[in-house]
Length: 142
Image (tube, rainbow, N blue to C red; front, side):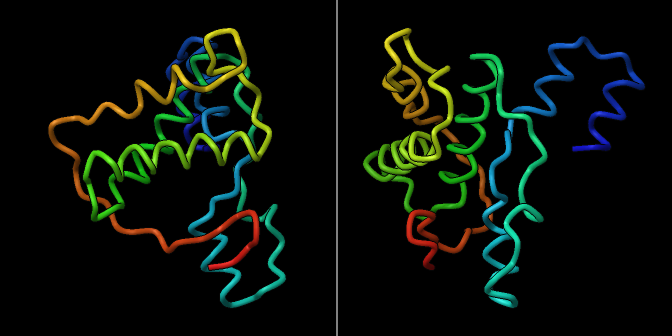
């Protein structure tokens, strides 16, 4: 992200775009690298494999964060059935709720249903992405 911010400043991108670059992953754990590191060292400091943040401060950045996460999870799944896509998108949104992300992706009522409805739409062509190992953040188990 640091190099992205440097490029954003160099090319004088608008403040909202610079904010998006630093915020769209928030302070989330980079779970793929955390899992790999914890296999080698079970007591790895999770802060070493987390994004620097800050958390999204705008509705647009929070929605982009959800969309980015949903896209990567769906693309890494071999099962692209409509039911599986719905389940994966729901899991991403529920994970953010468990992590207590601010309810900025709502219709004003604090719910995430509007974001989920749009993220479940299935594009005609999902590209390939390598599969991430399964991990349950709540129980820290693989």
